[in-house]
Length: 405
Ligand code: NIG
Ligand code: FE
Image 1 (tube, rainbow, N blue to C red):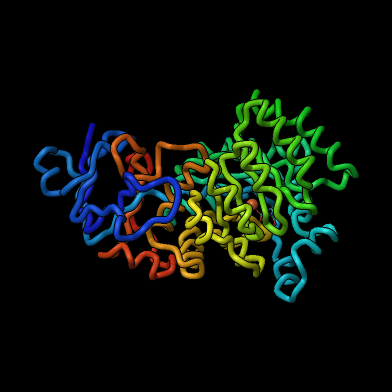
Image 2 (tube, rainbow, N blue to C red):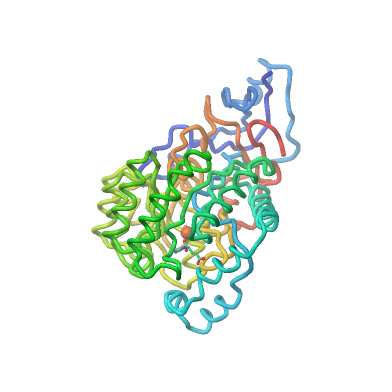
């Protein structure tokens, strides 16, 4: 049964906004004094509230003044972990490097030990708590990576937690296997570890319906380019979608991402003009993770350059216990925007349909006919207030699949 939701002072539809390249705010698609006609889980159309209200009886009247936009998509998180990394963060504040802490057995290894030791219930309640916080901040689709297990048993445990989480959280959870996060202490040979994952873990993921997405951390301190490429090629041949932690400290990862047709290359803080060009010419989404730059006190992804070169740019939190503990998408997108000189249209696109593209999803992230009715409304009278308030004004109305939460 269809219903009309509104009125909204402004609806930022992003309905026909381009998937790639720079975007001018003069072309931001805005419906003034609009309404959205929703049928079940889907959007039928948008238009003037007044004229739509003459076509339909069922009206969900919105009180007060609001700006509506598509539900946010966070295309890169690590939401399942045990323990805390407050100790690492404190060390980093006093000057210790992320890579040095990892080399000494802390960092990701610390979260691996704590996650392996944690019971499933404990991991599940952490995931549900974080995902619900995200949902209430307007994030209606959340990618979730494994990667603190590093063996078949524990990686499956984490991905099963994500599967269980799907029935407990109203946001969509999109799982990704990042078993190739770093090489665990049990293996002295990185290649041997990746062969073990390829033979013993990847086939089980398909059979158990746990995920169709594979990620790897490409870095000399994690997995160097050549052996990472063999593993990702094998994953691709098994039918998985690919995404890569690329160019965080050293280049190399984005090149494999482009060569293998990965959905996305994420991080890119160290990308040079060469990588920017490669990504711009490809169909791989470049994902900026300002939360990791803030968490590590390092430079931002060259978002402006990527957009100007013609790339598709998504913005995501990288919410994780180590490099990205904050996990606030809107705050981080606003901060990236002011440092990298992004337009509102570029930022809104980066946290909606361009982020959905990074997940291979083309059914959300725009307020347009046929799209999922995932929408959020802010208590403001002008869309510019949203980023001006640097993410501190949150949506006070959220619809997931047409249902108000
Ligand atoms: O995306 N860079 C590698 N992995 C994660 C961090 C994980 C951690 O520090 O626990 C990232 O930043
Ligand atoms: Fe990450």
